[in-house]
Length: 104
Image (cartoon, rainbow, N blue to C red; front, side, top):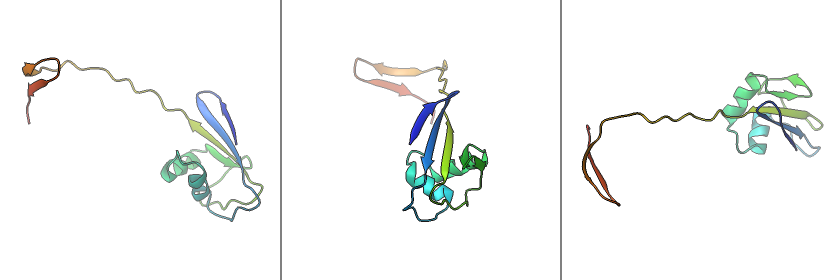
């Protein structure tokens, strides 16, 4: 397996080995890439980010020994969490406890 970073994405290359039984591309990849759900793999295939032998294919494509699969996985954009000023009615506060009166 080959990893490299290119334009904020992770690129992986897989070669289907001779002992691999024919199976759907999405099933094959969900077994080989545990960090990706099958639904995520199907979206990457639909978006053309997964190719087999340099060609776009469908999720139902049956992998064969010798197939070269390339995955281009976009990196997640960092979430921008911004605090919001909200009124808090503090009933009690010390070094260990904070008691709030809030709406249900």
